[in-house]
Length: 316
Image (cartoon, rainbow, N blue to C red; front, side):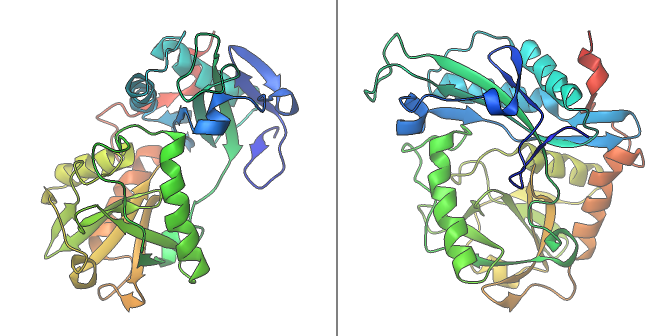
């Protein structure tokens, strides 16, 4: 299979400004605005091998959020959402992949070095397709060991958390690096108010007395698409769901804790700050949600929300 890999073996093709190019031909000038100021927005998407053939999970929602992120940062896009949807499918097919992690990114390119991009500053769009397994490895089965980070998420009205922007992830790097340095799989951040926010790259869920709880989108979190999917699945399974502010100690008193995201999928947490979570990991609600989530791809869960977009949907 010809593909691009997250392990350092880079080969195959990428989509760049409307053209399919060999991986090594995709270059960015050192004067690119995004390189100096973090002015990029991006998405993380997955293609699964499904009962319908290779298919994107919630492609339209991801592309819509990509465009929303660009609008927040006043980045003009010369493509429609449907054209980007088609390009995402095109690059996966070009690499002959049946499953993939797909990364569309829009960034300010070469031009002015000032903070405010001038008219000559270009806007580039690239789409990468990568071989990428479970983001946190076997933690998806055995559970992750996490810590509460000393780094907080940024306060509202500083960085817009609803935009999936490159610069925002400097915060995520600090959270994740601190966790790894101290022997944990991942870090959980508090918000500016000292209440639970999210992981370095994941949204957070807690199970308490059969109720599924998650911090609201006002808690300096990215409004995650996997988060929305889990909430939808839980409600469909008659699991009570509450979006509410939660203190740090709620992590220590929960029956189950898990993290979700496109890369992380649904990853259970087995310990927080070296304190075990619940009686078993994964717990029963986590397992039920994992089964329902992955069932979308093998057909055992009905895709009543039309979340799957087969690659041939946009085939010419």
